[in-house]
Image (cartoon, rainbow, N blue to C red; front, top):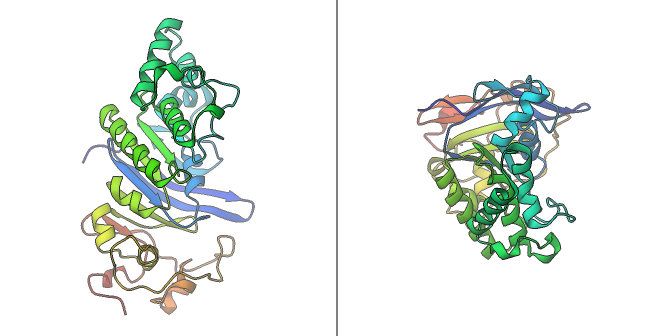
Amino acid sequence: MNKPLLQVRNLRVDFGRQAALRDVSFELFPGETVALVGESGSGKSTLARAILRLQPARGSVEFMGLDLLESPAPLMRAQRRNLQIVFQDPLASLDPRMSAGDAIAEPLQIFEPQLNATERRQRVASMLERVGLSAALVNRYPHEFSGGQCQRIGIARATVLHPKLLICDEAVSSLDVSIQGQIINLLLDLQRDLGMTMLFISHNLAVVRQLSHRVMVMYLGKLVEIAPSDSLFAAPVHPYTRALLAAVPQIPPVAAAAPLSEGSLSADSITAGCAFRDRCPYALPLCASSDPPLTELPAGRWVACHRSHETLNPLS
């Protein structure tokens, strides 16, 4: 396989005494789409911000051979053209005082100052057309657009510099279902045309299944399973992944799992053992004293479960 574009090692984020991310490690390869799923509050958005150094973190985030967490500010600033994000709320992510054209042109002014005004206008017009909006809308403001149109402007702003890594943080969750499909197709087209790597954060498993090559499952700030998309949806291994998929009506039936329910653990009360143990129907005494590491299984799968060796047969 190609050399990783992004390597995250032992990434940790603490909010006071609460661990929001706990020793997260994974890799992203050029041109692939990796989805990050999990319940609300599991740390997905915190991970996105930590990767982009928008959130203080410990560990290592190596992008194209450069450790972003250790890089001096000027070097980090130069890399930001290759690291872009599309946020969840399309209207809130745009400056209400900036027109659509100004919002898309701003990255060009910062990172490509050699362009003159005419060249910038041409790039902006081309990008608007590329995301399915008319160039005639260049002087309109965010309140004059629908939510889906605002998200298209946000995508245009994030991709006008042709970044190598695009992070989509719940980029379609606030949109109508019909608009979601259009935005997903737009992202897939842009990824193909620009050769971007994409980290797609979502709780919508139907969307994840449609566009991802691999899926990472997060629970209370820790990755508990990483697998190719087809394999994960066909045969989830970790009990949390099984319960997560079984709870979604539009996903085809998966291996039996107990329904998710509120447990007694929280991210700030984990001292030892598996964080999922109080909600897991397959927990062993070992699970209370030993936190299982993320361990490699055949076929490119990684699972953090003491019983992962039993998953070729149904757990009981």
